[in-house]
Length: 214
Length: 214
Image 1 (cartoon, rainbow over the protein chains, first blue to last red):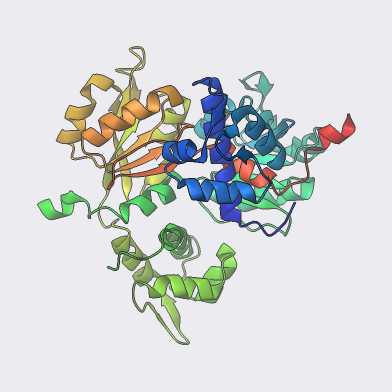
Image 2 (cartoon, rainbow over the protein chains, first blue to last red):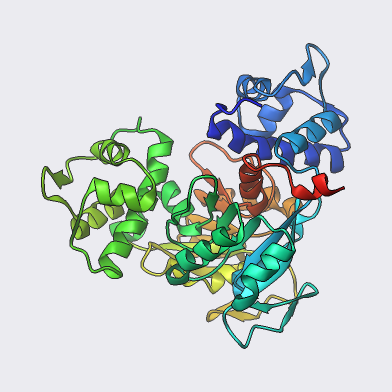
């Protein structure tokens, strides 16, 4: 696989995959087209064809894409053909929400261990997993061959937790801590911060009317 | 303000703002530089200078940026000088986590109403807010002049909820539902889907070792 495919293209593949799965499972569709996908996703059909063309020929002129085949191909490209075990660090409100999130099922990931530094949370059961103390982090990650982690700790604890995860062999971290993390080459971090997402939208809105009311 | 600033630039401004706030509040710094910010964020200093130059001259050659001044300017640019009231739709595990998230404080947003379709959740108290029935959505959003919403409902309910929010005057929706939403021009949607974020990272990893073990 070429390594020079822009990251922004890679970032759209999971969106295509999610919509294709929905078309297959909810709408029972067997074929689709770049036009239909584009309309559903708000992305131009030309963009979709160009993105997919980096990876091969998936559609036929006139008949479009076979949905199941394209799902299978995208699962292979994104390395989702088997399930990745995931370590969850942090068993607070958001950690609990992730542990109970049913959106992981059949999408390539399964939380297989949960850690918290709080003695009161350790030993509690979440989704049939017992919350473990942070002291067991390295041993468990090694034993379970875990390379993906969800980090749900306060900003002040996030870099130290990241360093331990990386040292233990984790290669991909989805962080909910509102802070930018430093990782070595070959380790990937993705961020989820609701405020950052909202701030990039309010740029486009007229300033909050409350100001004008004063 | 020019309207032709790339969305990717706008998307980095909240990251700069978050780091500047951390520098001011945690590290008690009064000045910084594009070099320092770049190192902390893993972004080139040239990129940071170029991004900020779209909006004016914020630094001085040799002395760098005044942190508090740049925070104030970014707050103005992103329309955060007053707090946006936010409607939360969905009071499940993740809705509860958002209601209890203390990362909103001082960053421009405050959840001021919570809705759920489930009669058992209606009337419950979350962070001193009483969960309201969905039937009160439009009236409350009008009365509280709300333009920002967090959508935390199942995929199957997300588009209908979105249509109602838009009809009631909401202009910016952060959706946690794993589905692409359709909105009219002038309304902004941002998505948070942990699986999409993880899938775009596993592309870069070697396929899960479990396959090789078989």
